Length: 115
Image (cartoon, rainbow, N blue to C red; front, side):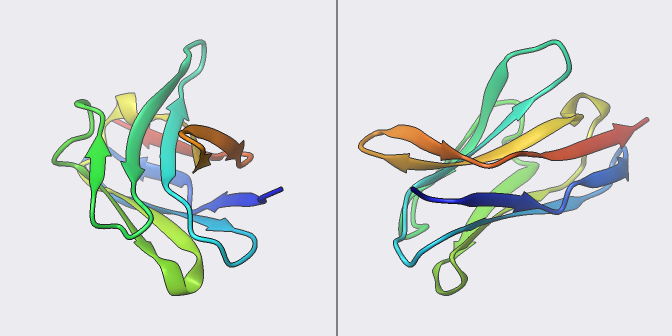
């Protein structure tokens, strides 16, 4: 069992920035993903980062605005969100990937962007 905890959500104005953090229990390093779910919509992929942090991938909707990176010494993955838009409003989730699928999820952190 891996415990996942997100933090850093809040309210931002359009064009502003927020940084989300995701911590995991234990000392094992995993590939990690960020997802988001807006009200009334399905959960969507946002970003992924490999164990080493050398490779990342993003949804088209956030490319050039969001950056995922990690500090393995702190067992923490970050999502830096810049140039926020109202359509970025959602609950953001962090997930641990094991055996090729996202297996452990956090409770989510709310991000609200006002126009």
